[in-house]
Image (cartoon, rainbow, N blue to C red; front, side, top):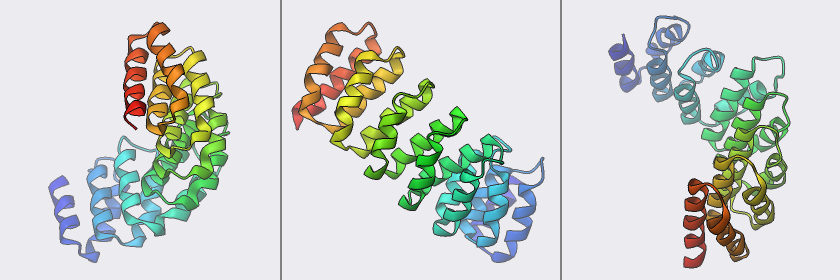
Length: 231
C-alpha cells in the first residue's frame, strides 16, 4: 500500500486524491506516505482532511511538511486551527509547526498570541515556528518567552531569537546565559548570541567559557565567541 501511495503521488493524477484522502482516515494505512503524495498532487481538497489528521498520529512532522509544500491555501486553515482553543493541544501544536514550515509572515500574530497559551507544548512549538519564519516583529514576544516557566519554551525562544538576528535580543540573551539553571537553555543562548554577532556579547561569552560549570555551555560559548571575532 505504501508503494501504491508513493506511485500515485509521483503520477500526480487528480483522480488519486480521493483514495489518498481515504488513506488518511484508515488506521492501518501508510498515513505519512499518503500525506506526502497528496502534497505532490497539490489539490486543495486535501488540505482539510490533512489538517484533521494532525495530532492524531506519529506522522505530524510529515503532514506539517506536506501542508507547507502546498503553500498559501493551507495558511489560514492552519492559523484557524492554532487559534482554536477548543481543539486538542496536540493538533494546535502541530499547526504551529506547520506554520513554521510554511514560513509565511502572515502567521506571526497567531503564533505570537500562542506564546502565552496555557499549554507549554503549544508555546514551545510557536516559539520555534517564529524562528523558522524569521521576522523581527516577533522579537519582543520571544524576548518575553525567555522567562517562560518551561525550559523547552525558553530554549526555543533563544534559538528563534538567534535565527531572527535582531540585536535588541542581545542583553536578554546574555541574562539567560548567565542566570538560567538549565544548561541546554544557556547553551542555546550562547549559540544565539553567536548568530547575532554583536560584539557587546563577547565579555559575557568569555565569562561563560571561564566560569560555567557545564562543558556543553563552555563549548557553545567558545564557538559563539569565535563567530563574533571573525566578523
